[in-house]
Image 1 (spheres, rainbow, N blue to C red):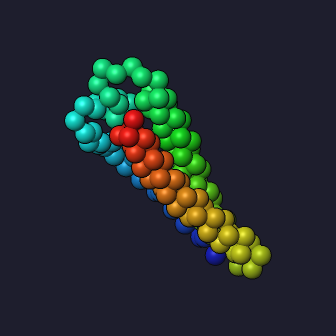
Image 2 (image 1 turned 90 degrees about the vertical axis):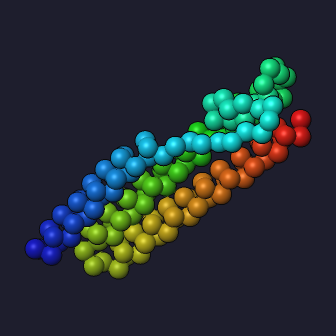
Length: 133
């Protein structure tokens, strides 16, 4: 009984520390982008200065929508990682619970990797489209 309470307290403290560290770290991450000549940074995307052509504006809109969706995916993956750690901590040594918690952690890590790779691919493709247009 004492071991279960100890594991629960450790899990709650770990989740709290992780949540606080994420909340403190992310607001200070600078969003720096360098644009080529003739482009300006607007809403996190490089757009052509003084050109109101629809495809460039459409690429900015698509980039913003995809970036928000990937941000939500990444945030959900981090929350599932925390949840999997909590389940692992509170499993009480039951093998079925441990396997389920490990799977939750594994799939959350895969989700974070997919979100990061998707973000990189989308930004590369949109940047290539803007430069070629």
